[in-house]
Structures are given as C-alpha cells and as structure tokens.
Amino acid sequence: MSDRQRFSDKVVLVTGAAQGIGRGVALRAAREGAQLVLADRADLVEQVAAEAIALGARVSVCKADLEHYAGARQLAELAMADFGRIDVLINNVGGTIWAQPFEVYREEQIEAEIRRSLFPTLWCCRAVLPAMLEQGGGAIVNVSSIATRSIYRVPYAAAKGGVNALTASLALENAEHGIRVNAVATGGTEAPPRAIPRNSTPLNEQELRWYQGIVDQTIAHSAMHRYGSIDEQVGAILFLASDEASYITGSVLPVGGGDQG
Image (cartoon, rainbow, N blue to C red; front, side, top):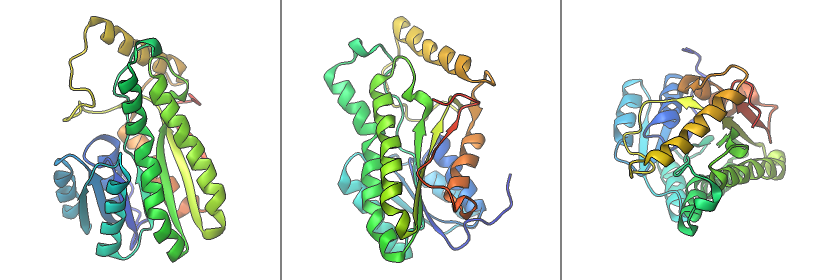
C-alpha cells in the first residue's frame, strides 16, 4: 500500500463510496492526505466516512440520488460549502442491474440501466464543472467498463460507451482551463458480496446461466485469465486523479488484465 501523500490539501469527491471500488478509492485517498466528500444514497457511506476519519481525513457525507441533477448539485454545493473548492471528482456510481439477452430486457429495465450507469456521471461532471473552471483546474476520473464489448448487458454497455464519449469530449472542451478528464474501464473485479444488491430479486436458473456467461467471457478475454482486485482498480483510478498523470487527458485506460474492451 502506498504511503505517498499525492492528495495532501486536495478536496476529493467520491461517488458510490459506500462499498466496493468506491470504498477502496475513498480509503486510499484518505491515506494519501485527501479531504473527502463521500456520496452515496446508502447509509453504509457513514461507516466508510468513519473509517476515513480514523485515517486522519476530514470528511463530509452527501446522501443523495445522483441519477438526478438535483442530487449532483447537492453534492457540489456541499463540497463548496464545507471545503471551498473541488480538486478531484471520482465518478464511481454504476453497475449492471440485469444480465440477459437484449431481446429479454423490458423497456423500463433498459431505462433503469441507462439512468444508473450514465446519468450519475453526466450530472456530477456538470455539477462540479463551474467550481473547477472558477478555480482554474481540477481532475475528473470516470469509472467506465470493458463491458462496452460484452454479452448479456447491452444497455449497460451503451451507458458506459456514453461515459467514454463524455470523457473524451469533456476533456477536449476543458483542457485549456486546466481540467483533466479521464476514465478507467474496469474489468471483472473480485469484491465482497454487495450489502445492498443492485437487483434484489434472486436469480432463477436461466438468469444464473446468463450471468455465468458474462463471467466466462470476462475471464476468457483477459490475457491474465482472471478477475482483478479492488486494489488494482483503485491504483489506476487514483493514478489518473493525481498530479502524476498531469499530461494525460481524454484517455480511457482499460484495467482488465489485457482485455481492451
């Protein structure tokens, strides 16, 4: 684990911070000197905040639904009220809700996938941009996915393809203002079972087979033939967020053991 202080005196916003990759990002950033604003709609985010405070970080918590602009605006306003600036935004909200062939998806499921995996990133970028423009710089890292080329999750793939396009376009538009925008396309990642699952309905036998198809494809397409760890994803995300990546913008970095997505 790094003992560097890459985020000393920096205000870092992490969305989807209650568990998984978001929790990992928050705690490592705390170890590296960040002041944190942690966003999630689950009460579990309070536990992560307590862990970060124990590591020496100053932390604010925003419980908001980032699928709507009002929640993203609430996050940005809290950060400015408590810290007076926004140096880094890590957009981590998203994730497949259903795994099934596209013809099986219902209209409301497709819309829910897009709302979950595109709009929080879109809205949060929009919400923090005025502050970054005013202060003359900042870094945004969007968590995307190599699942833009995948089976059984076409709506999720479309949402993450939108995240990649947003990343490139926003980077081009704001490079002259000192704002860097990059993405990490995460591959399959080993993580503890989610305390609050994205889909609370137990999978039937057919749905389990479809989900296993995703797992099999992910491992087969990785040159390393394995899933990654949360720490491996966190390392890439915080590299792009740090000044070590000061000459990188508009890039999507695949972190999938050789799977380019």
